[in-house]
Image 1 (cartoon, helix red, strand yellow):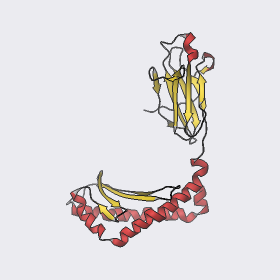
Image 2 (cartoon, rainbow, N blue to C red):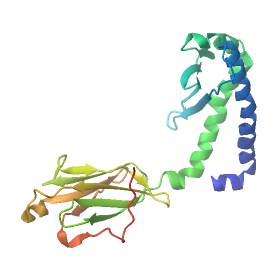
Image 3 (tube, rainbow, N blue to C red):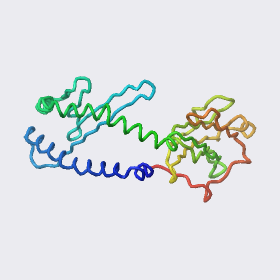
Image 4 (cartoon, rainbow, N blue to C red):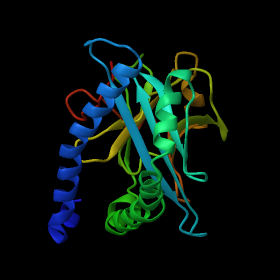
Length: 244
């Protein structure tokens, strides 16, 4: 995005003006809805979500516009018919009013099928170096005390489409394991861990266990054998994020 703004400073100005303009548009919408729904001066929330989908193989484009009012779906745009769908009776008046605004609906069609897909293509072109990159993690075996579970900890990977698990004799384990969630690192990469409870595992059986890390789009997994000699204490050495 920094490169995009540097190459095309008007792009940021366009977004800024849209944000400023939307303040007045949304306020006008809320004032109209309050009158239609016979509401007073309490706090009300209007949300609008719109976007497009572009298939780079077929060239097919689809788009959507949805509005919510006070936390509930209120009205949505049908791109095929250029009309509005009212999911609740309170939105019928708005539907009829907006259906009559043919130029406005044609503009939505232009935005969803031409303008926004072009933006998607621009963003994809600028974002390829970061969005399509893959970075493999460093993987560690950590244990707080000799009686604690052994944690297989992977950090520094990208993207966040990854799996990590323990397996025994080549079979994935589902008992005596606890999988942590994927968490972000400060540099934009990710980390995750999976714990293995070894309380019922004899020392001679340790060699039958291994940790497997799989990153989407990467053929080869990272496999770490359960070996007492490579287990590290995480105290003061590796920063691990925890979620509340």
